[in-house]
Image (cartoon, rainbow, N blue to C red; front, top):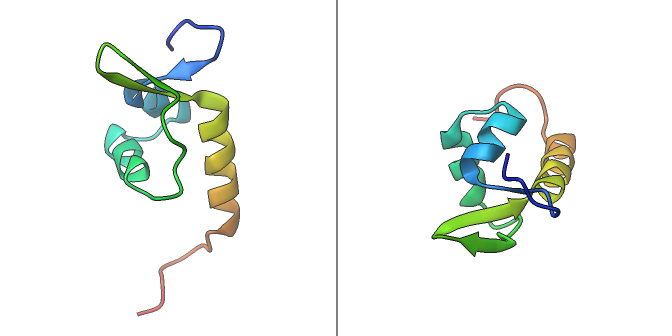
Amino acid sequence: MTPTDQNLASAGDLSRELKVPRRTVYNWIDRDDFPEPVTTAGGIRLWDLDEVKSWRRDTEDVRKPGRPPA
């Protein structure tokens, strides 16, 4: 995890912290409702980890189990 007071995380940090493949994080980043990066450091986008965790909880709450209708 990126050591800061703001709890910032790169895409790789998000992958490790949320225990999902990095590809999943990049798919999330492409979504319109995914939180915007807080800052960029050395060309690396950084997100507020708590904001991303909250987004994920809210997103999972509206998902239905099973396959989407055909």
